[in-house]
Length: 455
Picture 1: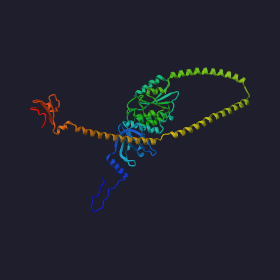
Picture 2 (picture 1 turned 180 degrees about the vertical axis):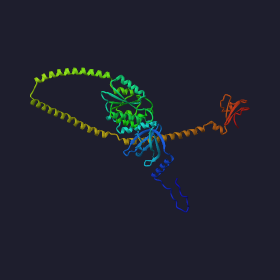
Picture 3 (picture 1 turned 30 degrees about the vertical axis):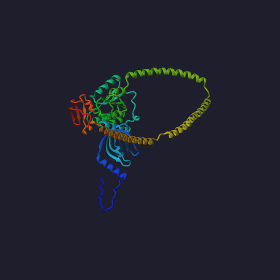
Picture 4 (picture 1 turned 60 degrees about the vertical axis):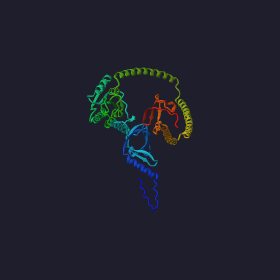
């Protein structure tokens, strides 16, 4: 609040101080920051921009309103994820004003996905961390062995998933040797036990492929397979790993780290070993194909030998002929490549010029849209004010014509028994009962006499 000196007839007049726009915006910003402490705000991300400085600029909106938002690099680097257009988020922000433009905005301190539980947020953070470190890259995934002689299983000996795996392997591949590396699949310290079992299998290197499995459950039940220690143990394992955790819809960090994911433990067993009947049928078919190919190849070789013996030429002449043919092909190839490349280069240059001429100026269009939106808002406000003023004037006129107001000024309405208003003495008869309506009620009167005209 500005204080002005009291007037003094003996002193000269001192004009009030004049604020600059910068000072005004600074005072408004401080007022907003003092009035609104840090508060959580929920909304949808729109117009997200990540500046080269590392700052995030976006609009936070809901169905009825929006607010400009900024998250500086010092805060954005700890966000744990980069929001995208349309993401539902919750931000902890300080309400302020950007003085350079005079725009009201919020400075975001913390951001999180809306409606996501703590476990799922931890799952997403760990997934993004390990993915950024290359732990889930496709080029590090190893192919399963073509012929599996032994399979290792990391799971609980009491788990139903183990019985399903053993049943499937007994049915499909009874020749495969099975090694169990027991570990609890749920509860405190179970993640460390699972990682230890995987590292034991890797160190012993006595199996061709390793299954890491357990049955279905809630996200809390499956959380041991979302721990970083398990993911790193799978990635460092010396043999290919198949993850079969939960049901088909369950996804864990172990699934991303493994060389292959199976929808269920039974599916993991089916991926690990090809059925014995398939191998036998394949071997029989290969033997038949091999005998047929050998007979065909021997027949073709015999015919070819006869043809070569009849067409045998001098090696020197044959080399000279091939050299000429090679030169002709090289010249044709050079021409075939050079001409299309030249045409393509000219076409590319033309297209680039056309694109440069017709490329829209997005910044100008965006500024034009903002300007038109402001004009539209101003027009709507003006129209609403005009309609409100017109409505007030009509209401005043209607109030003046209200019969009740006329009655309040001392007038009355006289009507007969049929409720018809009487306007002339000729309509009234002596000893007739009339109703007189006043401002605060009505009365029935009986006419003693009628005088046609007042004198």
